[in-house]
Each structure stands twice: as structure tokens, then as C-alpha cells.
Length: 265
Image (tube, rainbow, N blue to C red):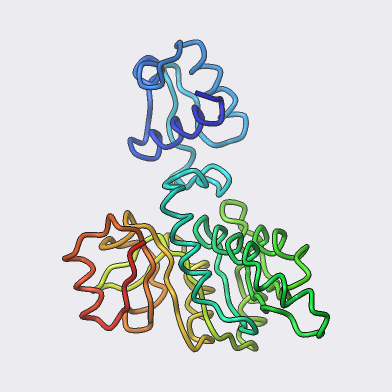
């Protein structure tokens, strides 16, 4: 197991339990207690946790891993979801991308589409896609692709998710119209709608949905049928849900009864 994998596992355990102890963590990872202590010390230096005498506790009251430490969770499912979402997009569209690990994979899947690359290489002056986003990392990945026109909102950067939020971001987004909004969520429940953990991100995602003709939620099955703090939109706003095959039939049926087209990949 690499150091990155150990750190990911330690942070996942911390999110799940709120605290971890060195000896049980070492047994879980199959490494020495000394290795776990060094890992915890390094993670504490990055302010990702608080060291205690026998282990570590979460850093702060509201705990969320930075995006760079969440990319490996359910990676295979996210790749399949992202490829299916990217296949929905037609050349010439204006699309909106919220921040998040799954939407970042969607951006990469769009960049890998050869037809979009060809469209950008034809020299017509018209972009293959116009991408509107408030995610710094997504804009950074796509801006080097000449086939895309990138529109990045202003706003205040949130270090955990690389997303720009606040009145400046909302002012820019409120003046734009998009064909398809691709939304990442922390939770999506048939009765309660789509939601995220943070109200500032929810406000931006809600506005993007309002400015779109079509709303696509890209989420793995662990986020479905559950609730989160800040509502993005009601279920009726969502046109299509792309998720993985682990979604139970019963939950899928509830989404479909609410008018959402469900695709499991």
C-alpha cells in the first residue's frame, strides 16, 4: 500500500468514525504503528486532522476532505458515470459544470472525446463546447483544450472543493444561459431533492439549474436516497440521473415516478 493509499484510508476512517487510534488503524492497514504515527503527524501538519496522544480526531466541527483526497473513492463507478454523461452532450452546446470529483471526471471525459477535438481543430472559430463553471480545477484542466471556450465565474474560492461562491459568482452566473447543467451532489433523494453539505455551494448549483434547459445529476449510488444539509433543487427540476448499477431498483423506481430519467452504468 502506497503512502497516498494509506492517507486516503486513514482519512476515510476518520470521516466515518470521528476519531481513530494508532494500533487499530495499523492493524487495518497492515503496517506498523510507527508508520501510522508518522502518517498522522504529516496529515496533522496539513491541518487535515488533530493529533491526540493515541491517534487523531477530526479537524473542526464540520469535517470534509479536500477534493484531492476524495478523487479515489468509487473511482471505477465515477469513470463509467462520467463517460455516460459526456456522451449526452452535443457539439456546440453551452454546458455548466459544478465542482466535485464526479464532475471533474465528466470534464476529463469530454476532453477525451475525439469528435469534440476534431470540431475544435476545424478552425471555424466556433468552439466545440462552451463550458461554464465555478470550479477552478475544472477550468484549469479544460482551458488548455483549444476546442473549448471556458467561462469561469468570479467569486470567493473554497479550498475544500476549489469552487467559487458568493455574490460575485452569482452575479456572473445569473447573466448566462446554458443548455445542459451537469450537477454533482452530496445527496439526492426522491422526496427531498438534490442537496449538498454547504449552503454557498448549494446556492451556486441552484442558480446553475435555474439557468439551464436540461439538468443532469451525476452521482454514484452511495449518494442516492439520502439527504444533506443544503438543498440545491427539488427532484422535479432534474431531467436525468446518471449513476452506477448498485442503485437498488426500488430507489430507481421512486426517481422515475418523480419524472427523472434514470440511467445505471
